[in-house]
Length: 468
Ligand code: 4AD
Ligand code: MG
Picture 1 (cartoon, protein in one colour):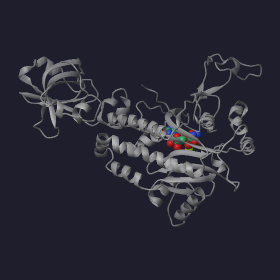
Picture 2 (cartoon, rainbow, N blue to C red):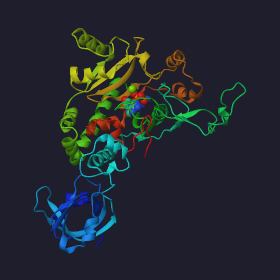
Picture 3 (cartoon, rainbow, N blue to C red):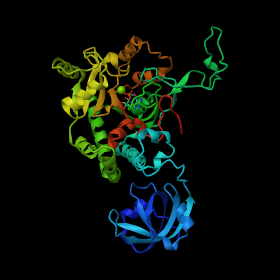
Picture 4 (cartoon, rainbow, N blue to C red):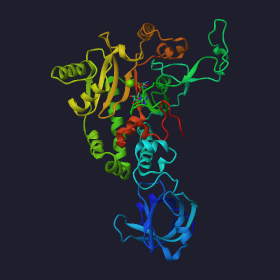
């Protein structure tokens, strides 16, 4: 007997296996008991739920049982029986136990008691073995699968854009440089500047902040594409919402206008949230109990409500009205400002009490590629703003007119030397198109109820942290 059954499968359909011998393998969560019997809660990562192993102490070596402690990895053969105790429907009466790896209780950091999130970040290599991070990782997987399913069902193609790039899509300059030059002995030109001809790619390159520009090339050939991959930003933002390495989903659609764009943004988020409710029930119930009591209700309410469409100008009017009525913001409100998160949260959490898709932003605060409105001062950008999270999606209709795009590029002094290929989309068969970027970890924050973005990715990268 040594044909392992995965605990999730066993617990989902135990009936057929009752009174047969099964084998399970996993890590000991707890061991308790008395002189005659020990109860081991075993978890193999496939589900938040443990299987209870009942050990008749008389049948086992004392030394072997002593070595089975929290964190140890074991293989158990035994009879699957209905459980007498409360809390589980079935349990295994152990007949044979093999210890793969012990976990010295003197030093193993994950003991029974609850640990703080800060402490768990310090042991990022082991925290995945906790209930909370197991749940987060399983939900992350389910959300990835939901994303591919959504776009696949719509006929979009998964399109791979490069991670190493020579262009700064967002124009914010927050890029990690990629080089093979020897930093202690940089090759110089006669004028003293660095000679990038000698660098690996023959020019300065960085890790990408967005796959959008290449995504637009895909959309103007394949119709509808999406990217889903890591993205890098060297902004020094030490907040619970920012990572230096995060995952982004960037769909890009030919022939979509502003209404089509906001419609798919809303549909996409609702699809993912509903997927979580339908497919991550046990993990969500755990998080609802342990992390955030309002979680499941909030997820249910989001899929049942219509998101507000709010022109920026109208949003500013609402905020100014709030100020006039005595509401205090840290940062002043006036037309043209880039909204601070306190402003976004006021609109979403206090004024509308539901998600808001803000549209038609001042062109000065948005990227060069956004489609310009006829008023000459706003662009068709869209930010989806969520309760507690703030901005979860940033997107826009793209400026497809070559002359207008070039004028904007010149106004902003964007170095377009290396961007001739992007401009070619507007020179040859240009078409109306639109797209957006969803921050995967921001979605994960919403779906899990976790408070800090460092706790929804297995190995977070933030300023001064690149452990594990
Ligand atoms: O608003 P952003 O900067 O938009 C773009 O990059 C566009 N090129 C997307 C597109 O239209 N294809 O970023 C998009 C989203 C944000 O709304 C946010 O959810 C997430 O990416 N994001 C971050 N998530 C975690 N850490 C950071 N430092 C993030 N910066 C942006
Ligand atoms: Mg943005």
